[in-house]
Length: 109
Length: 113
Image (cartoon, helix red, strand yellow):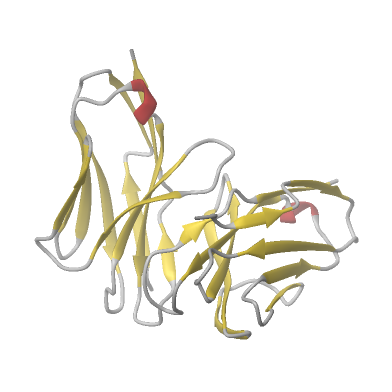
């Protein structure tokens, strides 16, 4: 069964304290791994797509990496405005996106 | 470029009633997917439509249905509402079915009393 597990469930950081979020997955034929950011009461906002192991993508303070079994979202020197829930999803052979439960990130000034 | 638009944003219903939610995709996107989001279950896939045809379906009962029109706009309907149907219903669009990233709307918050 296709499955996505994100850890930790919640993460509290001080402003400027770098860290990483993990997304482990099992999927029948990975056709893409996606990272989203979701603010309270809003829909998820697309961040990155990764397609193959070794691939990396960067956007401002965020960097996503992919291996054959997991992906990491690295946050460098975070700011309070980076506080949000970060969602990971994998696309299987059938085209369906399966989402993890998310990591709730809180960055304190 | 306008994003995905969902209406209504908030609604309150009582058990046994039915509800219809609407979604307008990003211009040029022909695929529309629907998700249910709850604190306990996270984002759960309902179905995906492309060219007015359902291409993928999640594990929800038949009370949940949807359709897509020729202009790619989509509606989903939930009949005989139950308390457990209270959730944020999210619509997402992408250019083609079965591939590529999804772009989400702000969601419709349904409360069932």
